[in-house]
Every structure is written in C-alpha cells, then in structure tokens.
Length: 321
Image 1 (cartoon, rainbow, N blue to C red):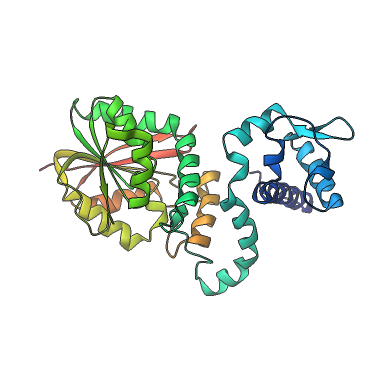
Image 2: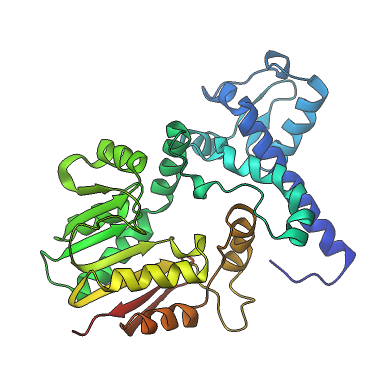
C-alpha cells in the first residue's frame, strides 16, 4: 500500500474498506448465490431491502463483480468464476469486518477478540471444510515450490512430515516428488484430507504440541503454522521437532516473514493484524527470529529461500548429528 501523505490517501483506504465490507456482507447474506446460474435478475427477486440492495449492487458493479442491463443484475464472468471457487462466500472475512470495531478495546487490553484457532474449530466441521477448501485452492503453486525445494535436499523415498498439514496439498506434492508423506493435524482436518487424498498419504490425528508424532523424519514441513503461535510456544515446538529429525534431516518453516525493521513486506505486516485479533500471541516473525529459534534448538540454520512473488519464504534448519 502507498504511504499516507494526505487526507486524500486516508480517503482511499476508507473507500477500500467500505468496498471490502460490502463484498463480505453480500457473501455472508447469501445474495451472491442467487446469481450463481449466470442469469440476469431483478433485485426485487432477492429477500432484502430494495434500496440497500441497489446501493450494494452498484458498488459491486463498480468493483467488476456484477453487471447490469439497466434494470437487472448478473455476475460478470470474473464474479461468476470467483463465486464458483467459493471466494465470495467466505464468512470469516465478513466476521473480521464486524470484529474490527473491537480493535480499540484490544489495543488497550491486549486480549484477542475471539480465538478462532485460525479457522479450525472441531465442533464446526462444515466451517472447517470451507476454510480448508480455500487454503487448498490458494496453495497450488506454493505447495509445488516447497516440494521442489525439499527434493533438492533429500533423496527419493525420504519420509516427510507435514505438520498441521490441514488440506494435505503440501503432503500430496511431496508424494508426487517420490517421498513418503505423513499428514499430522486435528481429527477434523485428517478426516477431510482423507476424503480428498485417500490412501496416498499417511495420517496421524492429534495435538502436535504433545502427542506422538509417529517416529523420526527426514524432513518436517510447517506451512503457515508459526504465525499463529507466540514466541515461547514456537521455541518449544521447534525444539520438539528437532528431536524428531533423522541426522541430516531438515526442518522447513514456510511463512510470511518480515524484513529489515519489520515494516515490509505489505502482506506480512498487515497479516499480523489478523493474528492480533484472533490469537493470543501470534504475529509476523522475521527470518532472523526463526533462525535464532532454530539455532537454540540445536539445529544448524541452513537455507533461506525467498519467494517474493508468492509472498512467503522458507527458513530451514538442518540436524547435523
């Protein structure tokens, strides 16, 4: 985002927030579903306030999601494609808009608005399914890149643990590279991953902070795990995982890390706000902080792989003996 240099720049941010909240509101209310057949419809056919719907439709039209023939509305091709992938119906985004009003209290008291466990609540399996579907859809390129990097460090047949692997796309990418892959996550995530990947993966359900991890591994991959945990918890986890690596094995930590003085890159800096709101200790860490944790765990800080076009980096530790 461009720096704020004037009141006009603040207006740009405000208008962007208004637009995002309207997209989220329509998705949460289910209005996008009415246009899923691609046909033009009158707003009167929807169940809602006509004035509010007209204002919303014009905002969405301005954003390129809806189109109008003057009296009726329909998805644009882009809007329809986004709806078909589920991108326009993600309730967590809309909930975030509501919860932003609690930020002043949070800043004073430091207590998370609501701990959501980053989308995984075992008592709400359909919510978890929607969250996992979104993560799976967004991780195609990243999972292949991570698997490629691991393949340059380890031989075919190596045993890889995908810790907190959720949807299983990273583990599946490992299998496609000739590795044995074990997915470890909560039971609800394991059940959903089994539906998607079947017998291609091994599965372990449990709490990775304390439960049996299923032996030792040639590599352990953590994708987007550390940002949801506080520093002491991450340190304890890294130390635990170091003990489950074979000699020469690698701990591969993938995340959005900050750079330099912590003011860049944009996606990492702003993502930390979600961690502020919905976790008790999560945040965006720097590469240096992760390397320090790796060293304290007795591992040798090895490669750092930056993937700026995908918005993440890999910080790798190696067990020497």
